[in-house]
Length: 470
Image (cartoon, rainbow, N blue to C red; front, side):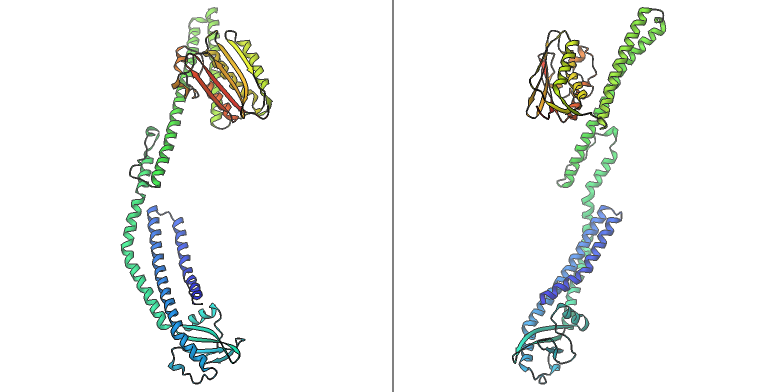
């Protein structure tokens, strides 16, 4: 019973503390204090809570110990004397006893005898707390059996002296905690500012990062905690941003270069026409043909750049439908045989399958590989296009016996506007955007693109598309 009383009292006493802590923490979240101030305040609040908890538990522990000892000695002796005096209680002199009053109740909990003020049997924690709060009395209660009937006994003891001792102990603990707070507060403050110093350094460094010094990185030396992980993550993000920025710069530079050449050619022919070509039919026809050719090249380049830009902005749409892949491959075979008569062409379509995709875009991707094979394969070389099912993909493979690709270039051939040195030296037409577009198309169909190549022996490109049924 004493344990239950103490538990209820503890919960009741701690409730205001919990309420205050929640209010303070809520206030700290809302107000724009520095992190160091919030950390320091949080630690100080925790310190105060710990001191108050120590004071409370110490006082309650002392009270519990004293009441336990009191129950086993004085209360047990007094209840035995009262029960032995039943029913003649006039022999008991209250003034000579430690208790202030006692009460006897019958089996129906009606008052059978009261030495002072009638009350009710302390059969619940509410009655016990009521007597402690109103009268500063601790009530010992028990039942006994006399003359063939059950009776209940309440003995009230004044608690003034015991409560004074409890308050003295609490006050001593709180004073000790207040003295400790004088030493604890500056330590917490300096520790908090030392903890956030790396964050301040990170903030100062990040403020200096601009486009002109995007290669600046956070210093991760001397940190071995979550801040190191944060710094490494931030540096990795900067690496990706710098790589993307450099690629964008290179892309703009290469695009400008690709556009500069046809514009220069067109300007040259226009100047020539302006000077003396108006009346020379041969010069006029040559100029018109050259300008038309360069205009077509510029239009092709701009369309490819717009295709890639739409892909970057996620506005590139594919018109997907179910279709048999053999229909597209046969169209490609027919068109290729019509336009290429200088290579040995082989078409082997071993399997057919239904694919859910954009027919025109898939045809465009295959045509890009075939165009490259025709450009980079010398006359008389062979080009082979095959189609077959491999695991969950339908594979369209384009092989040639062309100039091949150097090992160092294999990782870059899908970069925008990238052209290997061999293709530049041979002055083969193109902008270096075809493979980038083919890759975008394949990835847009949740497929894969693979390449194998041996310099001076040829290349092998594989487009792999998921299929529905064979």
